[in-house]
Length: 297
Image (cartoon, rainbow, N blue to C red; front, top):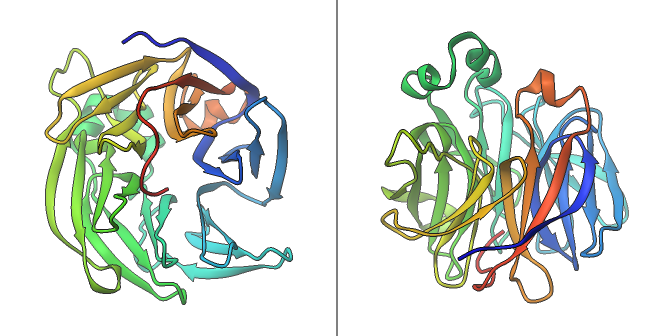
């Protein structure tokens, strides 16, 4: 199915963690060091300034904002009255930069991390060498009171994460394994029954690795393919159901809009931390799709 895409917003550095909330698309801009939101007609406002990179976003049941502070390897909380405090210290579980996150209906957060200095290794060894040989990383579970647990380990760059509408399954994109991995969610949010939900790259001539992801009402997952200018809709088992092409590489995606059928894509020429920080060449692009958003985030 062919899709028409358009640019909603340009002039950002590197957008991550897009979330549809309160009629606006919220996102982190890594190198602008802020959290912003944009309306469907392109009106952007800065929601929170920070002193380093932020990434994953989510909301507690009381409406307070949770956000990942990457270099601190910590989760912070901003209440609706503007107070900000550290919610959780992730450094005991995360070996390197904390990254994307999903928050469940009870306020539990699942937070991934890089596991190692990805961009330094990519510059030194190249994409395929890093895909073949890299340290694994852990997924952290943060309980609503801020207590931190190890949710899962031995993951290959745990990245975008979703929770199914029934609250029973968590799916995480393992970027460097080129697959979506599912877990059953048990008591107190603890994970079990790890399994491959879908491979994302079956042809080396068409490399597709999952960065940010989102879930639709048919149970399919949209993946932002960090190595290509496209978003791919994938069914459990790996069948490709749809592809949306953007103008630049796509690093995160979110379904939103009034009817949940707008696919927002965070795009940039590169994810290299040195290059991406130099110029605000990032964009938010969008396309209309048939099946609406479901689950979390």
